[in-house]
Length: 477
Image 1: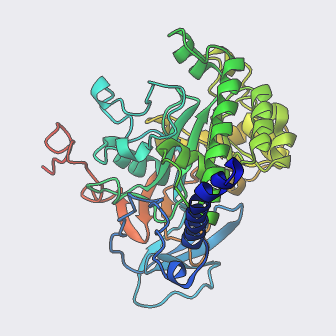
Image 2: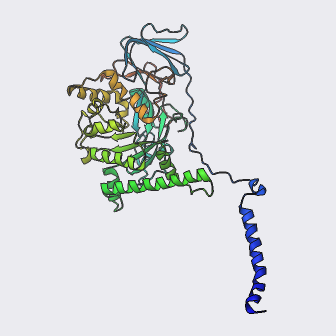
């Protein structure tokens, strides 16, 4: 036997083993009746709302208010009108001939006004509660410019006395609590019903979408530039924003691929979960931004990565790009006349809100302040007055929409509240005068049809546990 033949004899058994081995491997990995019946690993999923609302409306009686001037929240006005609500919902809104059942509580509103509950789209109550001390400072996780993983609700203190003051003095029935603006990505916001409760979950507005707080401009570059870290400039702001959105897009793509094909799930990232949901349109984006040029750049960045901006907050230069905001369906949440307290706010004008509105863009008056939340009606009145002095024709009823329906729309809850329409939540304020008057005060406030504040009844005002025992609070003597 020659050398070649001897090699064939030796290699033949090895080849047979390899052939059998390959056949067995193919059989094990390929489809067969045995493998198709094997249990498949369940896909990994996670709860997108692990801290669900436990809100339950307080009990309320069927109620009618008649002979009252109604601002319906969407720009409509009814003189000598009737508002009727029962079972926590608006039942009817109309003129003096509106039918009222005989077995309901009826209030005479002669000389008075009714509006939907006032909504503040930009608040830090609960995160920066009263008293304003360092121990209560829970609104900024100023440890990194990107903290999309934090949620404002996890810092809300339900005992903040500011909640009841906003209810009694400002007629506030719902509010969005946002993280602060130290960071480019500050974290998730939460929408609350302004009710007395022991837990944040019991205040949480049912089924309200989350928001994502972002910030551009001076605040992030000042906070982190002063530490000699990025971002230290507006260039750095945008660069880090874009890099973060790029990572979020990749994270979303990995999860999309996993949801489609299975396999090994991506590593979970709590912050990226928020940004992924924002890219999917499930989370509203609220962007702290002052200058017109920066807002325009943010709009382009949103188009680059495929998300939408709900609202620019503070936005003192929105009047310069009102047409662009209208074109992109972006709201501006502004003050009536705050300006000049830093360079990016220097070009603010008191006519800002009216110019935005006159251009057909969405206008909102917000507070960003524990005192101003108690008088958003007066802030709307100032903005209205400045607009009229500029020559714009704007009705009182329209100005009320700036603090009712428009914020509800921007927060994704306008199908539930923000206007006096049958079927919506009975969040209602009875004012002792035109709410755009400096002398107007809430006389009664209902939330989901429950009378939670009555100026004629000192006991009908929520008082937090923190206030009990304090001088002048909770004292019925």
